[in-house]
Amino acid sequence: MAEITSGGRDLVGYGASPPAIPWPNGARLAVSVVVNYEEGSEYSHAMGDAHQEGLTEFGSYSLPECYRNLAMESMFEYGSRAGVWRILRLFDETGIKSTFYACAVAFEQNPAVARAVVAGGHEVCSHGWRWEEVFRLSREEEREHIRLAIESFERTCGKRPVGWYCRFGPSVHTRELVVEEGGFIYDSDAYNDDLPFFVDVGGTRHLVVPYTCDVNDFSFWTAPGFLTAEHFYQYARDSFDTLYAESATCPKMMSIGLHARMIGRPGRIAGLARFIEHAQAHEGVWFATREEIARHWLEVGLDPRGRTGG
Figure 1 (cartoon, rainbow, N blue to C red):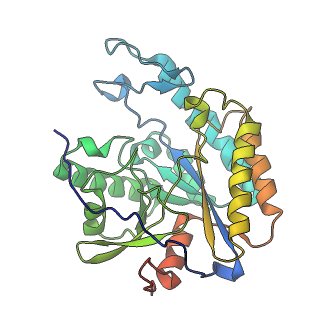
Figure 2: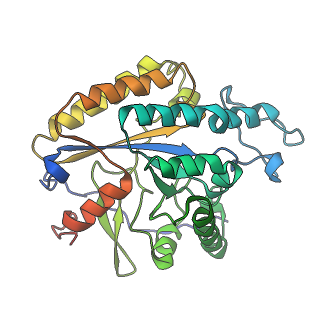
Figure 3: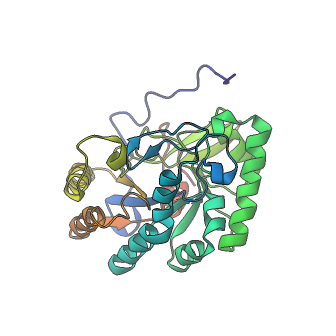
């Protein structure tokens, strides 16, 4: 039975007066590019799971559980075999530093990717031990999986992550467990703002760097008609242009969600390349990792009640 709690929502946030605090070097808009690296940690019979992922290039198409979904597995494998390398090449060519929402087991399955991400100066944020729905876990199971993820990243990346992000959303215990574990300076388990914000977690002031569902390439698999690189570029560009205009009076943050098996396809990567070119043509744009954004906000940021981060 799922756990349900009441209260704890904040529908006000910064309201009509977000804090007018600049980003480093006077930048006005921080752009956070995120790559969700999940390949090899998804639900599959190959991993010993009783059920399998149902969303693929075919759309939402689930095989009866008595059959192994080899087509699904191969579509995920594309991300780790080809897509992620195409993305990393683009980042190298454009000088972009990104954040990888990486599942620990996915890096274990392909340690060469982990090494390349670290060597490229990208941030590794924990996307969990596996690409799993943590709200289905007991509190102690979730605590154990957080510990397993940290230990795994220390082996594959040489250091532990300082950020946390769950698949599909956290459980009612996640944020408390992340704070209790220690070593995490932020989580991204929220979609409710254009700026970082602080929350109280059992008396501890904790930073949230919100994420996005809309400027996200999973629309290639979920939204009929959202089929071309140009569609992705247009939506990302329009989001950027709106936030850039608003950032003339107060800082803004733009998040972009990517997946190696989705945007890494040859016919889609061009949309991301066009967006990066568009954004880099503007003054005052800071392409930053989420860790960089978090550390800056912890130093100088304000929460909705006007308290500074320092």
